[in-house]
Every structure is written in structure tokens, then in C-alpha cells.
Image 1 (cartoon, rainbow, N blue to C red):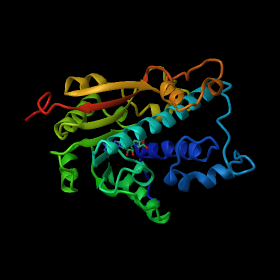
Image 2 (image 1 turned 30 degrees about the vertical axis):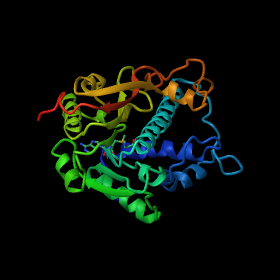
Image 3 (image 1 turned 90 degrees about the vertical axis):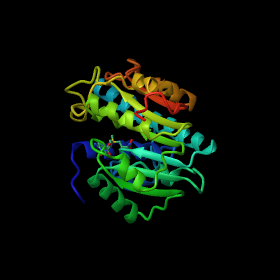
Length: 296
Ligand SMILES: C[S@@+](CC[C@H](N)C(=O)[O-])C[C@H]1O[C@@H](n2cnc3c(N)ncnc32)[C@H](O)[C@@H]1O
């Protein structure tokens, strides 16, 4: 399989969490691509119950364990929240879905977005190659239209999307999950502004916003955290450029889904990197204006 750089490999880490969650007896979602990739490793690791399912995560006993659990819950919560956003956009008649920095996102395979929907998945060529090989190997079939776009968000990425069929005069549901934290502030702001320019009235967006505050340099995520940048004011940038935003967090999303996480996190309550607290947020935005913050 092709080598991925450090940022590309983060897509595998996120998928491994989705695989674990998918195999839990009390799973809140199922991700066939993640399961195809990680099931045998999880079974071989001996953590499965006798019936082949996985138990809830064991309670954390130290700071590193709390950090791992914080990350696990953050990824489960964002999956649920962003799935809901996609479903609700589809119910409201949106037919274009654009997943920026799509990694191993399997929403085109696992969500019913309606037969007319088209999901655009955009990532850099090596990540796309890895994913397409897995999709072919495991014979996964998307339930919607699916168009894969190879582009780098640091340069012109809108033109290839438009060439692939995106209609910027129709509402789009955008997704930037686990993405903007990897960009220098000016790049993140440019991506946000381009999304706004390409959004017709009625467009939606789901974004993860994660701060590096409190991430331990000697913790289990030290390597990946070294790739993260400070939040350049993402929520503010969206609200300043015509988006109406709602912001929530891991604990609220999981509580609404009926999953109590306090017992798993142990006495300290939150992960040391704050990933269950206010430094990791989920944003859902609606774009109603065609004039505010647009270059045209
Ligand atoms: C943490 S992964 C998240 C993947 C996916 N959104 C998810 O949540 O499962 C970050 C993804 O962003 C992609 N990415 C980072 N920088 C990018 C860039 N400049 N252009 C396109 N994709 C990028 C990486 O290749 C990787 O797939």
C-alpha cells in the first residue's frame, strides 16, 4: 500500500476509532469501511467479548488513558453530530454534499441521503489512492452519487470541484471534519472564505473546531498534536462571513445520544487536552446571505 505522510495517516487513526465504535455492542453508528480496515486487528488484539463484539472502553486510570478516551469520545460525538447534519440537509432537499479533507469518510456508503444526492470527497492524491484501493478491495458500493476529487486545499481546490460537477448556484452541505486544525491560520481562513464564495443561499456546513490548548507534549497524541495549529477564530470567521452558527461539544452530543461518559473518563471528568471540554467544539452553520463576506 502507498505511503502516507503524517497528516494523511491521521485519517487512519480516526477510522480506527470508528471501527471500534462500530463493533461495540452498544454502537451508535456503523462504518463499513473502518470495520473492513480494522476488524481483524481489533479481534487479534484480544479485546473482543466472546460473542465477537467489543466492550465499552475501559475506564481511564491515568492521564494518558483519559486523553485516549477523550479523543475516542470526541471522534464518536463528531461522527454522530455531522451524520445528523447530513441527514437533516438531505431531508430539507439539499442534494450536493462536499467533504473536504475526506480521508476515509464513509458517509457516501453508510448514510441514506436520497437517490439524487451526490457526495464529493476531496483529499490529496495519496489519501485518495489509499481509500479507492480499500473501497475496491472490499467491494463497497455507495448508496448515492459519489465523486472523488484529488486536490490540495492549500491551492485552487474549487475549480476541480466545479469540474467534477458541483453547482455553486445550488445549496451545498459542506463538511470540514478534523481538518482546519492542520492549517496555518491564514490558510484556514482562506478555505472558510472560499466555502462562503461557493455557497448558495440555504447551504449548510459542519466543522470541527479543536484547540491545541492543554495537549501534553509527552502524551499519547504528542506526535499528531505537533501537526495542529491554534484555532484561528473559526467560529468568528464563519459568523463574520454570512453564516449563522450553532456550536456544541462532545459531552452534549453524547448525552443526547444516551451515552454517559463520566464513568469511562474516571474521576478527573475530562481529558487533559480538554477534548471533552470547551476547547473542542462542533459547529453547524447555515448560509442564508449571498452578499455578506462574498468577494463578488
Ligand atoms: C484527521 S484526517 C480527517 C479525515 C476525515 N475528515 C475524518 O474525519 O475521518 C485529516 C484529513 O485532512 C486531509 N488534509 C489535510 N490537509 C489537506 C490539504 N491541504 N488538502 C486536502 N486534504 C487535506 C488529510 O489528507 C486527511 O485525510
